[in-house]
Length: 96
Image 1 (cartoon, rainbow, N blue to C red):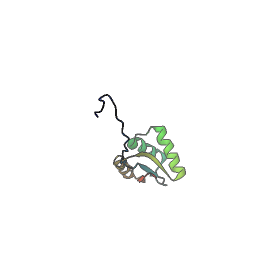
Image 2 (cartoon, rainbow, N blue to C red):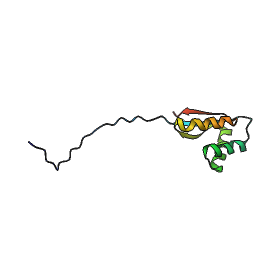
Image 3 (spheres, helix red, strand yellow):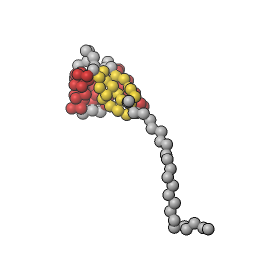
Image 4 (cartoon, helix red, strand yellow):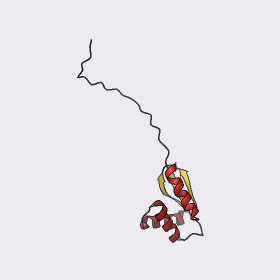
């Protein structure tokens, strides 16, 4: 018995995809840095618009911390370091 060359064979396969976990760049509130400095930092380092940076600063002030950006560790770690070099508390954390 020969297979018909015009017959399409469909196979169900499961694909295991390894995904890198997502991370959050957390900026912490303090009593030292001004709103303007935090806003300027978020605009310079994270590429936020003025409005977006201002909203983040308000949330940071009221909640004590805020995830200002999400992405890979390799993307966020240099931004975290740049923020902390400006005297603002920041950490990179795995998203739950």
